[in-house]
Length: 247
Image (tube, rainbow, N blue to C red; front, side):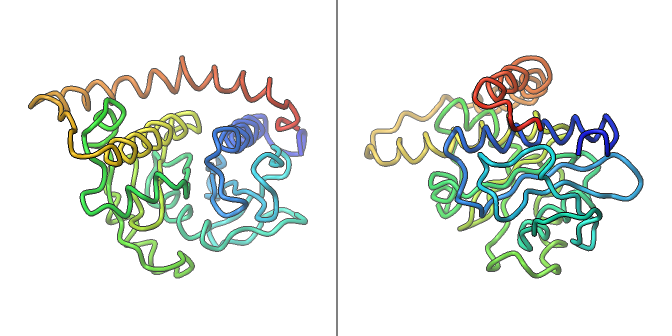
C-alpha cells in the first residue's frame, strides 16, 4: 500500500497499525471484536478500519481497510469490516471534526465500570484526570442499527471519552496518539476502581475540590503526553515489539 497512498495517509496508517499492536500488547483486545479507526485527510470523509478477520497483533498499515460513509471499502481489499464498528466510528467521524481517531474497547474492567450504576468514580488520580471528560450512552444491543448514530452523537456531546453502558469504553482524539492516551487513562481508572471497590468499604475519598483541580490539569497534560511524551515513546515501543506493523 505504501506508494499507492499519500505520505500523509501512510503516516496515519502506520500510527493506527501501531495503536492496534499496542492494544494487543496491553491485553485490551477482544479477539477480533473491537475496533480503532482514523480519518483519512480529504473531502470524501473516508476513514480506516481494521480488517475484521485479523487479530490485533496481525494488523499492518497496508491491511487497514479504507471505507466510505456508506460502510463500503473504497479500494479493492480481501478483507471485510465490522458492521458494529462502522456504526460507532462513522457516527463520530461524521459529527465531530476533532474525532480524527476513535478507539473502542471491551476490556473486563471497562465493561465492569460501564455496568456500575454510578459509572466512573473519582477514586484515583487517573479517574480524576479523565472523569469530567467522560460521557455515557445506554446500551441498545449490538450496534448495527444506523439510527443509533444520532443517539451516540447526542450523548457524547463535546466530551472526549465515553462509557458505553454494559458494553465498554470509547475515546476520540485529534490524533491517534491523543485518542490512545485518553483511552489509556480511562482504562487504568476503570481497572483501579474495580480493584478498590473489591477491597471493601474502607475507601479514602479525595479532599473536596481536588477532583476539579486534577481535571483541569488533565486537560493540559493529555495534549502534552500525546504530542511530545508518551505517544512518541509508545511508537518506539511498537517498533521494538515488531516493526512489521509499519509495512
